[in-house]
Image 1 (cartoon, helix red, strand yellow):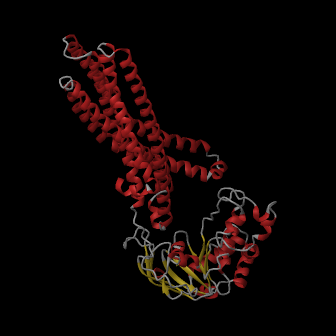
Image 2: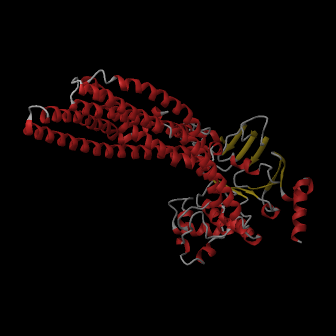
Image 3: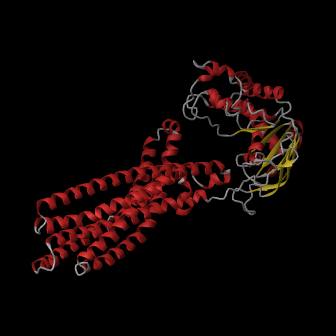
Length: 576
């Protein structure tokens, strides 16, 4: 998993290489300082060196300490640059991957989970990476250097920490094996909490309209408490690391003071040597403590890294690797040939079954059906938002899989059931349809979508800031802006998925009339709940339980199709 992410270092690789080199310089200084200190005590103070020797070695010791400080500061700076750059590239790679996801891939990961992976998981990975290139180099080098120096001073005293190391190793292995699954569970609960927050904030108006603040507060409290319990379960294992390390370290120091003191009394060890030996033992144990912290951080980040790699390794099911780059959509002809489709990609759980359908370029086609009858599923196959399970969908006489995805979708404009607007002005949102659209083209599209008049009623007109998600426009206004945005693409095919449900019947009629006048060469597909919205269509599809049960004109359907007639009669009675 780590190898897969190393490619994200990119332009920050030089900092990742410089950091360990600088840390080695810091380690060398820190390991030599106790050696100089021992010389000051044994030779300068107690020996024949005198004041001059003591001052000289003291100045050397200060110089080494300053160099160690400079190396440490540079190492921290380079590690921060490498770590933050590494995290930035991971986020970009993750975001780019998500942008390539098909609807099937998006359905597999929840939005909240993807947000957690792009934020919390990347931060955990960044922290682990910074610790590895800095402390992960410093600790082993200091451990080896301090052991060598300690063995040089007194091999007999070195037996003390040789006993301590296996104890620490066993404790660390036990902590690591127990902690990993708990941290993974903690991150899963983070996903659930983020999902609760996202749902509440996205639908805050509904929450307030139904006075459900207390319910949402309770739901969030439960999610947050679940995260807290998971954190405690994970952290209480990790927290054992510090007391075990400190107990071992202080035990070693007591043992060294006891045995080393006896050796000083017996004149087999100098006082300066004992002082430096204690310093080296402290360095050894601190190195082991740092290594244990690194292992713990790796355990925490391992769960995060696996979740990041899970997204990066996700197989995108809709690709255009074999597409003909020269193939263009010549017309708005649409044909379904024995098409079956399943969201679960299982033949025994089909959403659409054996669909045969032919739509001519320039036709206006209505689609009527009950809730859950697979109307939206049918039209989503046209721009290849999903791939068919069986059969073939043809646009302009060619299989949709033969086109480059970008080109196909550029020629198929779709106004979805859930109308989405983005932060920015009305004009910014409209130019999603055509970034190079002129003001005249924008106005023309808005007039066709019956949006021009209400846009001009705003103080800033087309430069009105919509806020996040278009919070300051009504549902019907939002629908009309989305329709205008789709018109600006000037597509071969336009699909309106129940996208006039929030406008009144008179405005709906004006939109349909404008479509008939301005989009005579464009294939128009209208999914609607109201018969009046598709009554004037050239033909209407009646779909029921994933099957097309009728496809004809309004008059013919009134005579021949019971479902269509029942819907029409019920709506007529409702109008009366």
